[in-house]
Image (tube, rainbow, N blue to C red):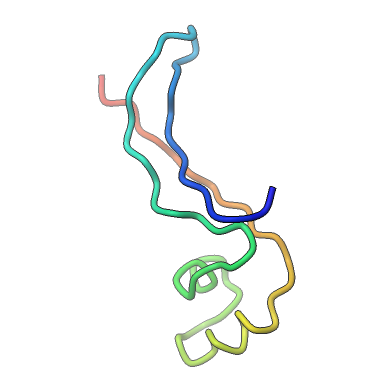
Length: 69
C-alpha cells in the first residue's frame, strides 16, 4: 500500500468492538521531517528537503496504543 493513512483500533482480541484514538496521517511514501529525524535518516531540519527529494523508499511505522481499561 502506498499513501497516507490513519490508524485506529476497531476490535479487541476477543473481537469485541472498541473505540480508540486515531493516529495523525502517516504517509508511507513521503515521510515528514519529524519522521525522518525519529527514524535516524537525518540529524536536523536543514537536511530535510534534500532527504525528502531523494527519498524513494517505503516507510513503515510502529504505532502503540495503550489500553485504558
